[in-house]
Image 1 (cartoon, one colour):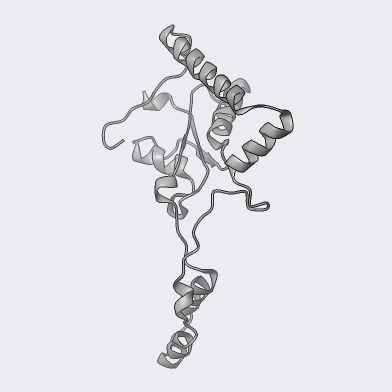
Image 2 (cartoon, one colour; image 1 turned 90 degrees about the horizontal axis):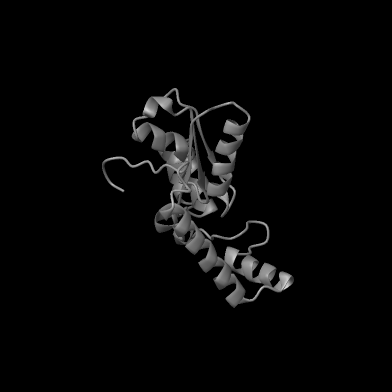
Length: 180
């Protein structure tokens, strides 16, 4: 039952600005109490795993008995921002009160300011994508593509077998009516 859930944590790579604590928004939309504490982890591609680790830590330390952990992704609808110059102009518009101030502000507008900033799923400081990073690490450790594929197949096969044999009984899917 929902009342037994003591904490909710979720991971996300790219945050939607309107729902930066997506764990809280999802919990409220799912009908959990507004007294249920929630937080969102943003740690690149391992965000959901970190959310699960956080929940496990809360349970292991005795802080909570029942937590929900998971993850979401917005790659199908990533936030696309206006350029920095356009954002600055738009924020300045709030300060312009008189018609002359507004006209002066409008004179600073340039069509090039409308070119959006497309998000990149890349490390901010290095510009490296996860794929490039994975290829670089595989080369550094001498792991071939076929070895990676064999490992992935084995992992999925063992997970499927464990599910069939009931060995993952501590993993409980939570489904709610409505859109999925």
